[in-house]
Image (cartoon, rainbow, N blue to C red):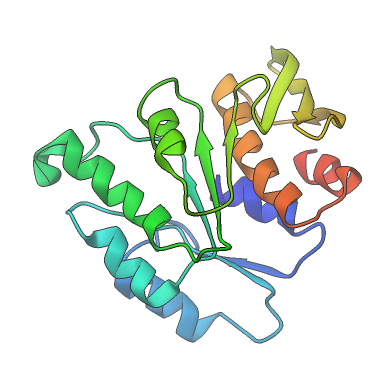
Length: 195
């Protein structure tokens, strides 16, 4: 999602995103100190977690204005011990958003959808659900990439093509497009970024 979002947002903004898996306090600090410049308009910070409180620690110094919950699952149960600890840790990102922040959730018909419903304090979007905020129709997958119609709650739709393979990448694109729309990219800029 971070790479796709960077590509799309770069159609309008000067974007810096954390490279590789620089998603720890030390990694984020290095990127901020060594690469972040006044000319950057958007900073994309991947936030990793292996223990309860890891996301809260990262949000304390990053102070995000937009948060994306891509999935919640049993990753790192060896360190988190329970699924509830993972849920609460991921939701720390949403708790950290300012009152006018923007929360984006993947409609997984499970935990992420429940977190979306629970979120009341900030503007929010759910993607992947027809009639949600952003979804895809007419999806066609091939070994040459994917084509689909990108649909928005406001009634606009864009015919899109990407060289990325697989339905999972359509989901990642949808998450990115919700943010792009929120940040006022035009449909043409979004379409170009996807391609």
